[in-house]
Length: 487
Image 1 (spheres, one colour):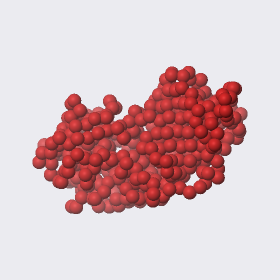
Image 2 (image 1 turned 90 degrees about the vertical axis):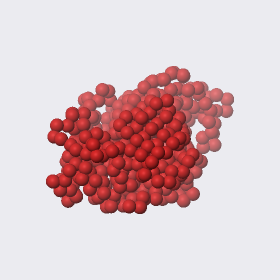
Image 3 (image 1 turned 60 degrees about the vertical axis):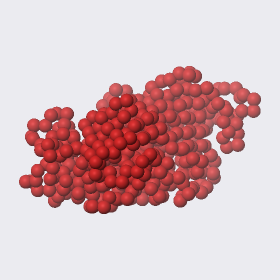
Image 4 (image 1 turned 120 degrees about the vertical axis):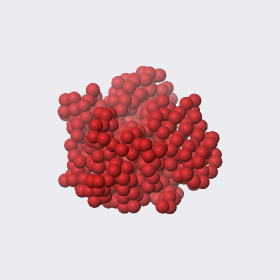
């Protein structure tokens, strides 16, 4: 079958996660400071009504409108985001609504997160009860309930700088904060450092600011807050930034076709041409610019001294399953909030694809081929949801991989998601695929209809969307050099 001539940047997750850090700035702590020379200090007003422009390498791609109200014992925030995102030459509109209540220390009490693009909608809402975060995900009528046990009450993604401000973090001091990211339904620890104060121009004025920088899984994100805690500017990966503006300025035009393609700017040029990746049995690659949080060594990959060797799997000795799976393998048969392998619609689809008499390998190949043939290859901006992908039958590599996991698990085959880089037409692009258990872990890619996946699939992480966020730390830093191709 002819190989698809494009693949999609899975990293809209990265974009969303970065934007979660930029948004929801809750400025309700008054401090008294003396002005310095001609530098002005902005006084926050309540209820807060703030507008910010979103830029990518200096071009406006969206805006944020945020309101904040102080209640008797809690604070309520409401934030709307509009962006035009370009992936693989396709520009799409993305709307995000985040609202909720925070405790006096700005930790999370309750939230509602709603993401809408031209094809998909994702909703998650929840609340904290004692040591648990109760979550509901999915569209009305098909929402699923889940729980996350909490060690401490987290902050919602973007409030980490406000938490640092509230904690009176001293200059050159680093502190860790627990945050909840509604786009991945995961909790992470983020380190924030208070840097030296800086004076920056905002809306025609020179403002004395507190500068904070966060280490978000290896990716650096910085924010400049006024002496009252008002977020004025932020910068992050892939040339993304936000800046406080007037309501009129925020409503002005947004770059559309002229915006830079996220897929292209995050991809990596190959030093050699790989003409037939699917015919290679092994590849040897030198990798630089990586962090310790990645999963480079294991299964078909061997990584030592920055040299990675990827060997194509042989299915002849690994295509059987038995009923006594080890516990650490059997866990990947269970459903998850966005991988509804136990849902009647997922099970019904599996029954249409496979036969009870099929071997495990036959089942896997039939399911991969069905996803390849029936899911339209199209870039979308969403949080992948297996049930919704099955309904809409369209998506990029993220949608293919999350649906494939659900179908394979429903068929009794343990499966996970993998993410990293794949070669295509002279470049390595960010991509997501799968790994399934047939006596040993074997790669599969429903976008390219491959079992096993070709050896140019460089696995950097394995796991759900929360694990995939570890890629933020290497995006824009990783360097590749293909040393050897073996057929």
